[in-house]
Length: 108
Image 1 (tube, one colour):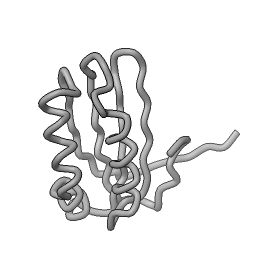
Image 2 (cartoon, rainbow, N blue to C red):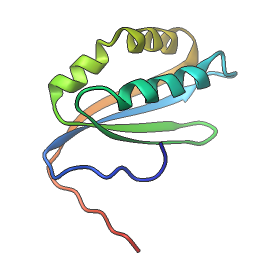
Image 3 (cartoon, rainbow, N blue to C red):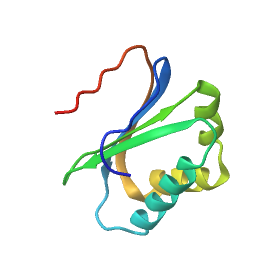
C-alpha cells in the first residue's frame, strides 16, 4: 500500500504503531508484507499508511470499529508476528488506538 488512505466519513478508528527496529531483517520484510495482505482482507479494515526512516517506523491502520481492531489483534498469524516483534524485530514500540472524529483531505 502506498499513498494516503481514502477513508469514509468519521467516526472510525486509527491504530498508530510506532517502532524502532533491531539490526538486520530476520524475516521482518516478508512477514510485514504478509500482515499487510492479511489485514487488507480483514473485516472492518479501511486502509493503511506506513513510513520508516533509519530509526523510526510509523504505521497507521484504519478500522471501522473497536471490535474489528480486537479481532485483528487476535488473528492467529498476527499473533505470531506480534511475538516475533517482541522477541527479535523491535527495540521498542508504542501502540495507540484513537477514534477519528474529523478528517480532511486536500488534492493539489
